[in-house]
Length: 354
Image (cartoon, rainbow, N blue to C red; front, side):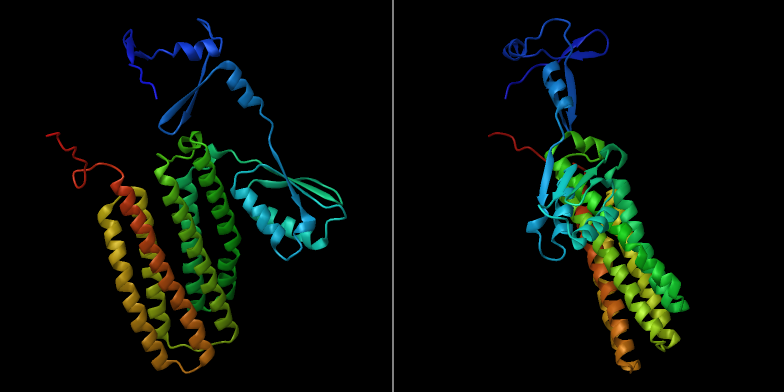
């Protein structure tokens, strides 16, 4: 690594000289244009020829042999795997015709992955193209959207049980595909930023340290949406069975659901605002809620006799408990994110040499 001093020219312009060996190798002369590419905290300097090659670089094509994917779900999972790795052009082909099962998996997965479309399709071949401009999808905005979906699914599902509104529970379930779409897009962008520092700034991230935390957060939020879906499914079963529940049981359940949604919101708010005290309260609140849910289930077992109703209520409570646990995890990441910066609470002190 070579260091260079920054010089000041005029009132506000800062300059740095270029290494002679590099300029000679690139055949650069006075007046030639060079290009700067930002990569997180770094700048990459490109000579005209290097910049031209980057702009003209062809898009790689990834060929998938459908014949080798002879088990249910394999093609769908291979396409998702290529998508999250940031690949833009996929070719699915077979020496014989693509099976109807493969075509169904292909169309289902295209519907669930943002920016992915079928560019070409014949009997033996399908070409998928992904067109995602990362600068249009800031990470924090996607995180907030995924959080909102999970919270809405949970609240609507519990309200559907209290009001016996089957349509509301079905609406909650239908949001799961939207949550999956946002999640896989998040994973794609996070992994792409891990390979290309230039994306860190475009995505609104600060540095590479954010990647691991965002990956964990995305998974936790997606799992909360799964919990909301599980609650909605349990509610639909209870409504179809016309299960009878005492009003106090329903009221207590709705209260616990509101508390879980509140913890979930506090965890995310602590992450975004770097509020250490809110993060700590979320962790403590999650532990307290676990005990309240245990006491609630003790009450349910004492009052509810129908096994099917018991099972449905236990499924709902188990998912509320998981949401509290995931809120705890999000808050823990928020604490780590707070500690990334030097503050009066925690700052580095360089020991003096003796």
